[in-house]
Amino acid sequence: MTAMLQVGSQTIQAEEMLPLLQRYQVLPQVLRGLVIDQAIAEFSCTEEEQKHAIAVFDQHHQLASEEDRSAWLHRHGMTLAQYTELATRPLLIEKLKQLKWGHMVEPYFLKRKRELDQVIYSLIRTKDFGLANELYFRILEGEQTFEELAEQYSQGLEARTGGMLGPVPMNQAHPVIANLLIVSKPGKLWTPRVVGEWVVIVRLEKLIPAQLDESMYRRMVDELFETWVQEQVQTPTP
Image (cartoon, rainbow, N blue to C red; front, side, top):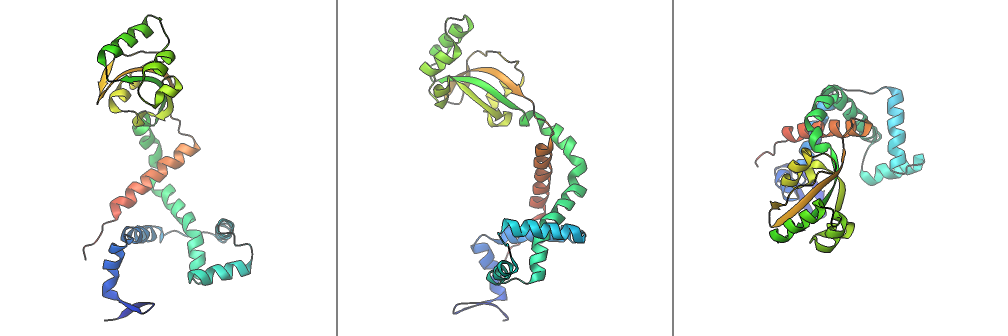
């Protein structure tokens, strides 16, 4: 057998590497790196782009001088060429993302927009259906405010905020509640509904539509990239 590594008094053979990677749960990370490296192999960067990438890398790792860089290379057992490759890798990944998924961001965003929209809503929850009905009619008839009743009767953390929750993405609400909010206009008060062990009263306060701004674009293209990477990574059996 061919020796791969010497760690203290232990010699690790080539045939032992895969089981060790699996044991220490780093195999998925290795496979992810291989998949990405294969995908970015066709990309390159200009000299100016390389200089900028290295400057960003040095700043991130606080390498302010050649001495700092040499010490960092020694500490990580890397050559200058490997360091340059590591520093420019994010730029090459970004080029891959833009070429492969940049044109897909808008339709992907539109497909997901409903769950990306944010809502502010009020909630009262109790385990007593009769009480929930009584509270609903008190609010509907203006006898007491939603906030007052939530503070007094709601059995969740929302009691501390007068029942107010959000802004939160629509998909973070319970599906039953989300389905009500999706078809609501601000101020819409819903009759009590059973949600798991609770009986809830829900009112939409504000809908905040998701916008395809720079931050959302970045999120969408990253999601598309991560989905692709996960599809490519297949853990081999030993």
